[in-house]
Amino acid sequence: MNSSPTTSANGEPLLSVNSLRVYFNTPEGVARAVDGVSFTVAAGETVGLVGESGCGKSVTALSLLRLVPPPGRIEPGSSIRFAGKDLATLPTEELRQMRGNRLAMIFQEPMTALNPVLTVGDQVAEVVRVHQTVSRRDAWERAVKMLAQVGIPDPATRAKQYPHELSGGMRQRVMIAMALILDPQLVIADEPTTALDVTIQAQILELLRDMRDRTGLALLLITHDLGVVAEMASRVIVMYAGEVVEEASVNALFEHPSHPYTEGLLAAIPRMGEDNERLQTIRGTVPPPTAWPTGCRFRDRCPYAFDRCRNEAPKLLPVANNHYARCHLIEEPERRVRTAESNAGVLS
Amino acid sequence: MQRPPVRALLLRRSVLLLLAFMLTILVAPYFAPYDLHSGLVSQTKYQPPSSTHVMGTNTLDVDLFSLVLKGSQVSLIIAASATAISLAIGLAYGMISAMVGGWFETVLMRITDISFSLPRFLILLAVSSIVSEPLSVPQLILLIGMTGWFEVARLTRGEVGSLLTRDWVLAAQATGVSRARLAARHIFPHLVPILAVMATLGIGHVIVLEAGLMFLGAGGPQSSLGSLLQSASGISGWDHWWLVFFPGIAIVLIVLACNALGDALRDVFAPEQVHAWPTT
Image 1 (tube, rainbow over the protein chains, first blue to last red):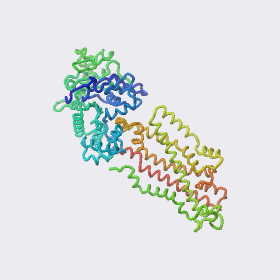
Image 2: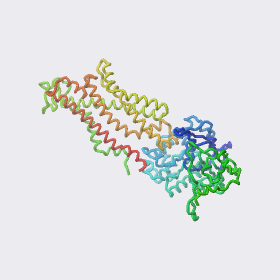
Image 3: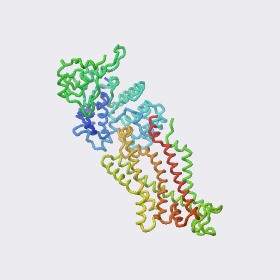
Image 4: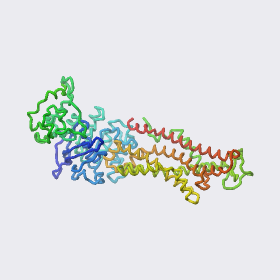
């Protein structure tokens, strides 16, 4: 939509994640939060990573920077190729030099992601000082310039203020300034607008789109909001229960959702002007990551589930060109019939 | 809009008053009415309090008020220096164990747990009796300081452990901040409030500890308040009450002031206030 996928000179995508597994040892057992996720992000591309709470999308984001909090661990066999290096196995010091410099992250909660005891200017300038040998003053000046670029009025004064003196929207602009000040090739934005007011959300998305178009960075946008995806991304990855269940261009996904979960997500978007009395929902909740169901992990919530779904885990199958879904219905389309029992769960 | 804690601290009159009291103790001996080293100052020994000697005189006929001023200064210097050592060791120990984490943290914390079960006072007394010569002031400071950091280490580790779960720690690391920089620049400022409180309460505690050690003869004549009490201990009873009374009062006053300062600091840096601060 906004940018077309391109590959770097050697034909390799900027980021290519392969069978990423992130497990947590918990008292209830091993939580397989991310369980064999593979996807790519090309240079300059914007990819949406979508799913409901607990599907593993935030853990996926953190694992790209190897910042999964303990007891979480990236399992051996996972590979995160970024700009020719494997972030999953890169030595700590080399990885540190990449963070904030080559790939950066924007967090969900601007309220808590800034250190309350340091001025915002300090925190933006620190990113420069950590990666480059510059004087304190030069770093500060660059920080002020960057704050101006992300639309903070009177940046020289604002830079000297503490986070609590700024509004939520301003703080998210500061976070964006921190992420973008070194011109990273990839920015991971984890629910960048979820904690903000609706009007501010639009402004922040506008800013992100603006900065992306200006610098040509690739954006991995993690969200549960399909509206945000439609507005920003060219390609979408849908995650469910630690797995990728569907991957497609934004148009294909919205027009021909192939996985029942995606179908449910799209049906659950409220629309103006339709006389639906109640919102569509997907019945049930995401199962706990310590006990994913056997076979298809979505089967207990799926309106089309049949016996094969219980016994056999579906593979990610091609639906069309560059469109994949993890569902047996791709092979047996005649089964796409709602069972009577499942209709009770779909409220319309 | 809420002020940052440091400015709020300076605005507290109680804090200023108590700090002024501490400073007075440190400089007072230079303005003492009588010289402590010139030997017999007045005509008779053991003068009771009078207008010339407000706290009376001692065995050697030295003015007790001047001795108490000097003793307060020495006691405070010993206590402050020893506490500084304890804080430095405890801070480093607690911070490193929390930042490294894992089994390393577990081992280090078990070591402090064990240290807690050792009776500090008796160890100090034992060490000072093993050393044949009376302890010098620096030795005493070192001894007390090196046995007082366990609590500091434990509190620091707990605080750092909880700070490490904050979002801004993750966000800082995501920008490439190293562990060392994270500790020094991002986490340390959050520890200043509890360190200030631990320092004041620690000083009060060490003053009592040191007085006890001196009273039991652990040190030599070091002119601290404890030594004054010790030198008065051989002299019997009520007839010479001032010899015990005034140094005792001085200890009580200083300790009360330290605790009050600690409480005042705790109010200024109320933990819930510090924690609520980012979201207001």
